[in-house]
Length: 185
Image (cartoon, rainbow, N blue to C red; front, side, top):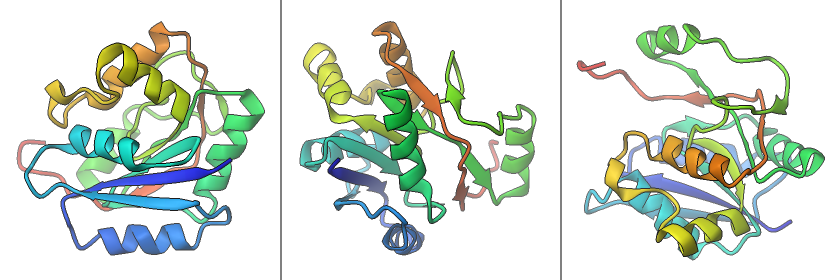
């Protein structure tokens, strides 16, 4: 495989930490595409821009405030290949106490498995085949839906892929998430 990792970013200081973690992967990406969202187009816009610039046959997405473990990419690609999946993804290990408490309310499995609905979908810890993303772009005009403006575009894409009978595999290899809860959460 040729693997592209796309990182949508607001230019946060944590981007350097994410890039450093990608440089230490046991399976190195063939390219890292950082899309800086200077005009507040949103994460969906940045991910779509990243898809357009990426050259890999597999495209992984990381968030600029996430720190993938050293075997992150290797495990996603291995699960993708083992299950002949369209999508392989996991979740976050939250560093913020409130976000951690929210995530723990719905514990996820400890083992890799085909997702029957609802496990895969976190846009900061996911890998797609280029073909499936391009199919969404051809048929729907975009991969990540710009209408949701950073709230639900990941899950909306997963719903479209489920309707297309895409094979999704859950990989229990959480990315350490440096995001802090807001007052509204």
